[in-house]
Image 1 (tube, rainbow, N blue to C red):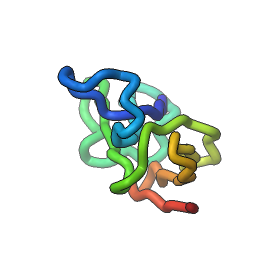
Image 2 (image 1 turned 135 degrees about the vertical axis):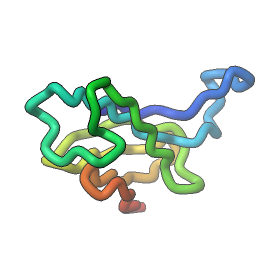
Image 3 (image 1 turned 60 degrees about the horizontal axis):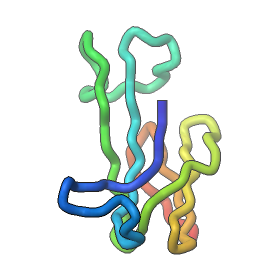
Image 4 (image 1 turned 60 degrees about the vertical axis):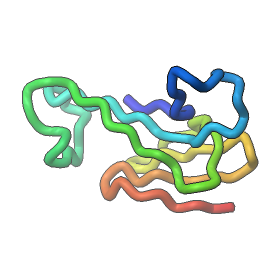
Length: 93
């Protein structure tokens, strides 16, 4: 499961447009859908992994999933792709 949004601490209001974006991936190790689990993804319990977006990227919205790539758009107009295998972002602009 993949979500996109922003990292919100308890001291920050959810409508703050300057929040740093992040992608959240929830991995169920019992699922046959896990094609490329990492060492952090293995084990017998469900794992939640946070991938903060590159600096300057604000709150994210998931626009599409294409194989192992999560395509996201930020509230400041930046588009990015998170490679779910290498766990790296590629910023389009």
